[in-house]
Length: 301
Image (cartoon, rainbow, N blue to C red; front, top):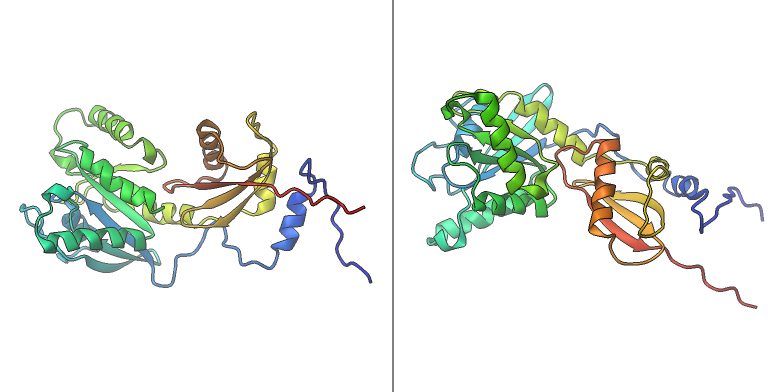
């Protein structure tokens, strides 16, 4: 019997593994680095505390009074959605109800609106987290951001009502961004934009940024390219044989090492940072799964 393809490898040293994996997965569908949006468009959920300007932002993005705007918190109970086409890309925006603390959520209608808001976060491709610049960053903002992060959603932090900030704008932006990064240490990958949904300032560039973080979350890197990238990294904790990407939105990677158990936090963070530096992945969380490489069965004598 003639064997069509022969691949000389060294499992112990990882030699030839990337070529073998590329051959095995050659028939698998693979998204390009600039993935095209789904047929129904990029789904964008607008989330945040009550009365931070989510409905006003939806109206600014769509160019029409689609959502009811009121200074009374809790006006939006049901999610309001609107489709917009910009530069050939369809965007489906969903304005969700403001998420309150559980102790503040008393009415059943409000409880259900919060449940639905969290559901829309899970169904979205991209999440816009709206903050109120006049109130600063509060603990509930971090809780709401955690819903999007834990759901693996691409995320943009939108600091709203910036037109109401007086004084030195540049210095205040740096101070506010520092406060946001300190509060949201787990969202170091998320870009921050300063805007005014009421006046429209800073709203138009959101379309390009939404597309960018969507493409980052949809990016798939070939096994061969990942392992060429891995050759330049150094790990003292354990030996890493190879790495492969098994899903997108969020980008998820399997890291095969010489023993089981997750990587040390510092090594995991190092690997994620290097992946971002090499391949981008702006605005999206990255998932790492460590697997122990299976040992070869002993030969029978």
